[in-house]
Length: 624
Image 1: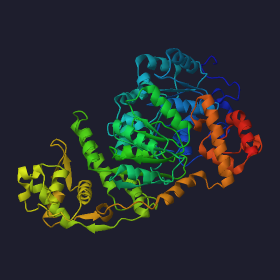
Image 2 (image 1 turned 90 degrees about the vertical axis):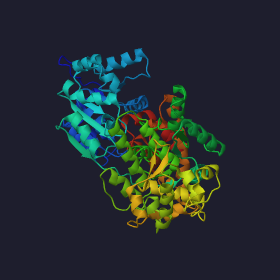
Image 3 (image 1 turned 90 degrees about the horizontal axis):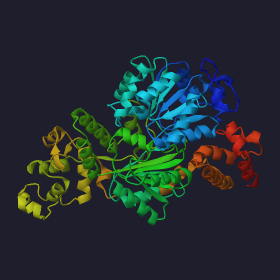
Image 4 (image 1 turned 60 degrees about the vertical axis):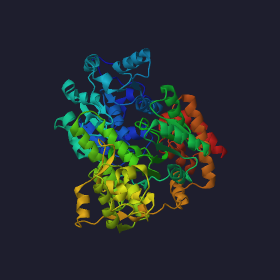
């Protein structure tokens, strides 16, 4: 460093030691990261941050938000601090930057004290221009004082929705970041998230910028994701139908409980699927090993609770399946967003049932004493239920929640196979009358038994076999009434009262139906026995298209390139995508470069990776 504390230019092969050698962001994009052009929205955000404008950027998962702050950091003469919520996210991003020749420091609880001290010294001396750490470590008096002596020019807050009480994933330690502007008035603050509705965005910007920054929303649409929702009837059969044709592809299956996670993983392994269970109850070493396998191997299905996912930067996840209802639209959007980050086709499926609704309501009621927070979370769950029962385009419904718009997508289950909506007013009146006649004090199972004329002890003891509605619905099977009640709950005709052990209660909408003032429209397919899916081959063809429509010869080469990538990744102890993402391997298989110069023209092959990997990859290509 010179006498003024600025980093001097040294060897031009080190990106972060030589900010002056780049003319602008495009030079960094090409010369460091090996890409020819920016994705939509990236250039605008980079220009704002390079110009010193604090910015909240809302970008869909897979839009390339990391480059939006990494490139300004490389171009800047001053240091950059990236605040990230998870150790796994910090490690993966640091590994990816180092693979491109960028010096980066990382400090977290997973490293030894000696290693953390070494990382800090590199950052303080200017040998590393970027530092990754958690909000807890940054917002201590000692660390703030040390940062004050360095004077970073840019603070980056990843997963910024965690700062807002209006968001679905509020973390108190994140809220302390609102004081960054006071501690570092001359620094630019950047905040990034893929999950923030309008109220959350306003709250984040107010906390961080106090009216002096910009908010850029580049849409929430992920058109490469095929959206699908089904009522849960038999999760084993439905899951295997969904996995039909996806052999050799990576995906995630989300479960609500640790017990179900283990059960599903064991079941899939018995069915010949390479599945791994992952949840917070496992030892940290086991979770890390499982994550490394998922990141490095092809064709692994991770069966996990929500403990897995944030910060998983694996671009070639081809599917996400929820076996239980998520807690909100934000959680659902974030979790499906882990599929198809490479822009290639990917598929999603959510199964849901009444038990899921009851459990999610219970979780909300048990979450502290803040009544306003509980009300917000119930409303979020209501929005997700409305999405589940939507009869129109699901993408339109999903984007509308985030104040975004689009035309019919043609790539969701409702667009591909439009449901028929029929009049279910007669059945609805019978259901609502049964609930009213029993005092609105019983759950779905007992109400269904009454409607179907069941001879149970519970019915006889309470005299419910004497009700006018007893047996009125016996012509319909149990599955019919379960689906009917599910749609009535989702449509706002009934609520599940958690305080009264999950009993069904009527709303004014149900009263209006019973009074003849409103009809009850229902999706016909939800009322019919579900036939075995015939769309497995169709779905598989769409997902397999992710390989870029390669010929059989190129497919064989792609398999060889993936095997080489896995070997190199394991040797270096990094995820496979850090060597090269799938998109780069597909382009290599198509173009078949025969020289370093030709390989250097492939997207994702920067100078550092070209020098390190050209020889082994060109050897495999030449032998193909």
